[in-house]
Image (cartoon, rainbow, N blue to C red; front, side):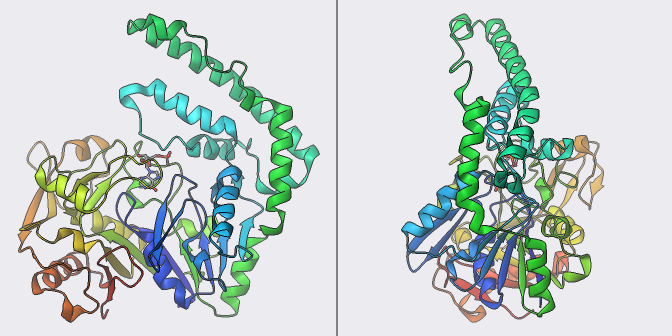
Length: 449
Ligand code: IMP
């Protein structure tokens, strides 16, 4: 299976890191192809917890090449922080490669993300405020700064100068509008406070260039032509894993726009974000939790507001790795999952966190939606207004009380758990090949396809 793509099949945080970590055993190369440090994954190895935002999960295997592809947006401060943390933990990063074509999240992107969200108020997307959207916007506007620019001070200065001016202007306008909003809301005192750090030292051209030149020096040993590196590994018939961040329903084109991220987390985007051809992909895995969660705003038909949702939150420790926000929890949505199967061309599913459902029974899975006019919706609605007002209809399945955390084979799982997985596989038409029963590397059950 030389080219394997792994994507999130729901709204993110499905536990892709753990699955990549397990599948990475068979691979020589692991490649991130989109997103940035809005992602976060936690891997527990021998009881030690590792949290990553940018570096692919495979880094814990010393001999594997880990690639940050051209489609990723990289905050160099965050990347260097992760490199330092890993070195401190005794993990080698000598096999980490960073695409020279990846775009950089600059300080003004972070400021714009935050100011933009604040301005939107109740209409905000609930972004991670890490500068992801503004960075991808600059990429599309051809005002982006790329990793390779860090290696040439003259080019870097010219590009930052060109990009900075419109940002300063936009930030000034956002600040004026914010003051107006505060005044209108009767918060006169806040509105007349001097804006913190004006002019903002983080937006000083000279300091920014100097700092980024020094980032360039530190990152230089990792910078590479990463597309070529993928081709070479694939040509040698080695297994290469292309690891998506976020998930299908957060896809900029195919997710619940505008409540999405600013990149394409679906499988097809692995080609663009890593620089490979569609025919280099041999297998696509989708990762889904045994229930569903979502962080930030946006439609979530199976969301629960009761004790069951609260139990999922607590038992599943559903708090964001990146922002610490509690995640919204709900039942498994098979209408949405079937959509993810089709749009990604999934060959296999990994269902994570099945252990969290112990004692929460009976279990429900959404099998169709009903529109506000009463129409049956068997497929995921493409129209925002229909999705926003759709209500799910459920199939009820028996739950299980047995603790699953020590299950290691299909026979160890209670019949109800196997039936639950069987129902999902049958409904969406894709086999469940792997089941997560706890955070540890060993807490997994492999199933026959
Ligand atoms: P952004 O990617 O920071 O622009 O945020 C856009 C939307 O995607 C928000 O609803 C975020 O909560 C969501 N999001 C971004 N990254 C992740 C992730 O890794 N897991 C879950 N949700 C995410």
